[in-house]
Amino acid sequence: MDKNKPMSELRRGVMVFLALAILTAVEYVIGTNEAPTIFLWVIAIFKGALVLVYFMHIARLSGSEGGHE
Image (cartoon, rainbow, N blue to C red; front, side):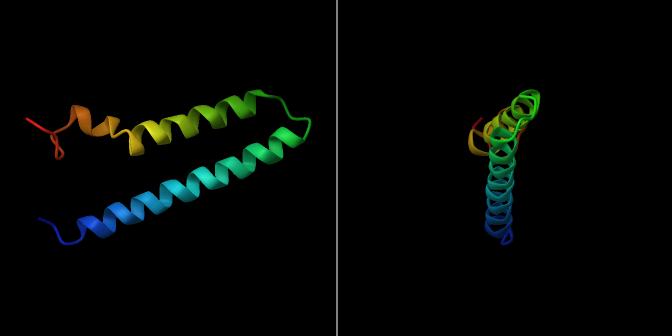
């Protein structure tokens, strides 16, 4: 087992958290101003993709990275 894996996973989790927090703040600013809603849709799709890949482990289903055999 790689000793750096837990720190790597923690770092990735913190980065995803920060990305989602920043995108949420951007969504708030866009939503409170008179901006086109297409920007909100793009941000929502990007946030959804982050959740799918990181929290739902979609990327690991197709690879051999720690999956069940």
